[in-house]
Image 1 (tube, rainbow, N blue to C red):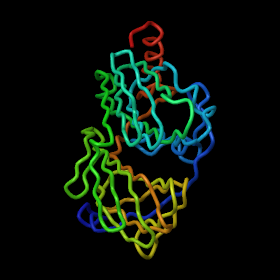
Image 2 (cartoon, rainbow, N blue to C red):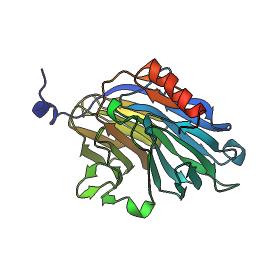
Image 3 (cartoon, rainbow, N blue to C red):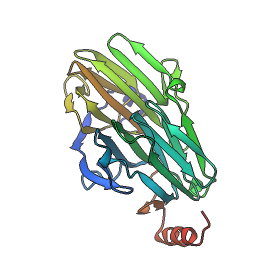
Length: 287
């Protein structure tokens, strides 16, 4: 049996690759669903990963009008465009390019995410992260960090923006003790080898959104192309090599909760009874 000490020296191998599927959400916003589709319903503690990206205003202009959440967190990372967040707990802000919004729904929140533009490119990601049973009914929380608050580590042929977790001396501003997340945006030039540590035992994936990367150790490395996700096996580091003039990917990892999941629409609880209660509470205005 591999011990934690032994795994810490092992590069993570790719155990599954998949492409996202076309989907729509909100008031008809077109997007690509990567996690949360039949080939990968979830990856504990991650419940959903959507990529949105289009130059056509009609694909995003209707936005995401008021809708509820309970029992998990949403993480929105903007690459291009501007999106306004507003919720029923008094939080409001505009996500600019390079900014991240980390919203903890907890016991209940109703919010909207609406474009602040009528033309131009809108591009980014939304990730859903589960909360443990003990935190599902916690008070809602909202964190927003502009690009200037997200540290970037530059090396030869490599750039790493740290949203959550740590790389070298850079520490991301987002903290979540329950899942101890890592979330990094990585740019890698062709032929450049790069590795970074990831906690042993955490679920992890790499999603390439520009170019292509080789992922894994030298013997079992797999080439991951743009719009492909690689689910990673266990180990203590992730090894990457650029396979295009300029490649970009997000690396995300988190401690699995290993709890039962009862999920329907915007609510994620542990039992069916808790789901029914979530619907009843929302309908009675308790959010």
